[in-house]
Length: 134
Image (tube, rainbow, N blue to C red):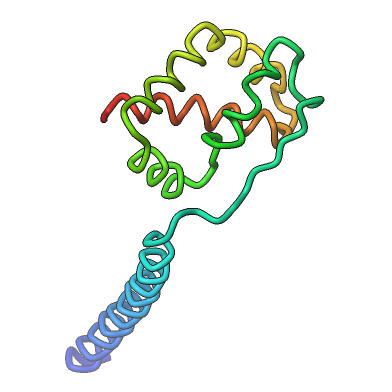
């Protein structure tokens, strides 16, 4: 094979790679645009949890988990941003004495899938951690 042919093959591969990357980036940019338009409005999902799926000693926290236990990082972040400092402090104070009990409950799932309720409590704990940067 001649040097010209080898160089041409290499350039074709490079151009193909660049085009593939361009399409990939363009696809990601479209997704971000869709996400940003969704972010301009408050989250619409409602989270209805079954209190009977929560340990008795933590059930009183279920309404907080319904509000704050959002799995989507963006939606949870928006909720945190919109919340007043007093609301953020109230959540932290409500959870503080129960953090170890919540963690023990979540750890009890081990390799088994978490229930929706357990996941909401986990995300609520994460929300408290994320609030500390505000």
